[in-house]
View 1 (cartoon, helix red, strand yellow):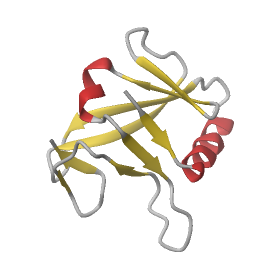
View 2: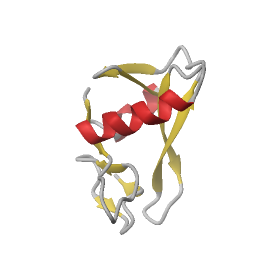
View 3: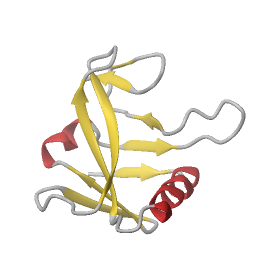
Length: 107
């Protein structure tokens, strides 16, 4: 199982986590919703669930519920910078369909 963070995503996560006093990392969740059926949600974690899988990538701790892992195998998270900065961008090789805004997908 692998998840990749671009260097821009690592910087963005560090900025977010530096603002949270007791933050231990980030949790990535997959929820029903969005125009394609499933959507990504990121939340700052102070106490991660013990059953989640932990990924440590360049000092960033990322927790994912085990049930969500098959939906994101090989996922890359980016955070483009520039005039059209959209926040975090998810590139999911498992997704067979994505919406125009890039925040929801179907498998």
